[in-house]
Length: 226
Ligand code: G3P
Image 1: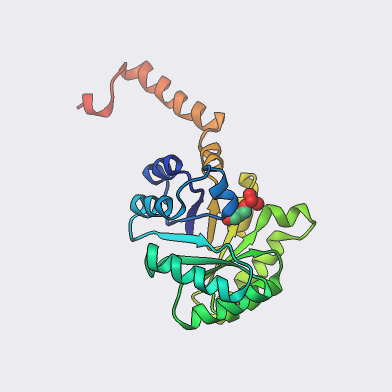
Image 2 (image 1 turned 30 degrees about the horizontal axis):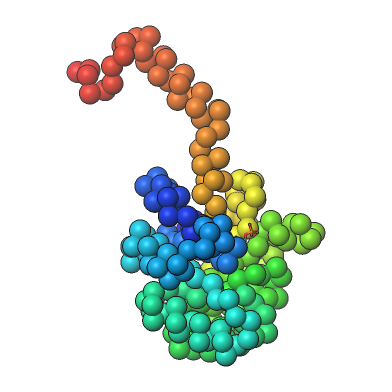
């Protein structure tokens, strides 16, 4: 299983890496927009420096037509390195580009997936990750959990190295449901990760343990007792 950060915010990535078991960083043009008009490739370089070579960096193309997608992919790979995952929306042109890039051994993350059929096509075209848009699917009455379950079972049955990378989350229930339905990876906005750890019940449990310890041993840690 994997957990990725769905953000291009350097501060959040740094904080996230320090605390959470993060295996990669994903972004898209809307996520980049949230950072203002940053120097794009320079910013992506900074993300790569923060996450190191051992984590994956997923960078989305902007173009819609296959030829330009391929040129953008080449530019991304030449500037950010050959291990970079090229995120390509699963349209007809996108699929064509995925097929060509995957045949060249390029890491591809197929994105904007709303249906099982899109996922199957992207998997067959050679994508390494299938970015399934959980919350956006619910918004248009598509059963996201069912699509993830179907894709995960197919990937498992076919023994491919392709994985479901569930994305577009607005609450923790969506994340746990995606994992429980077979998504081997979820990419999550930093704020949502924090929400999961800042629940009053967790804080109260930790506070109660301290209070009980202090009643018996005073204000000491294990370092202070024999
Ligand atoms: O990585 C892209 C995906 O997470 C989209 O998220 O919040 O724009 O639906 P959102």
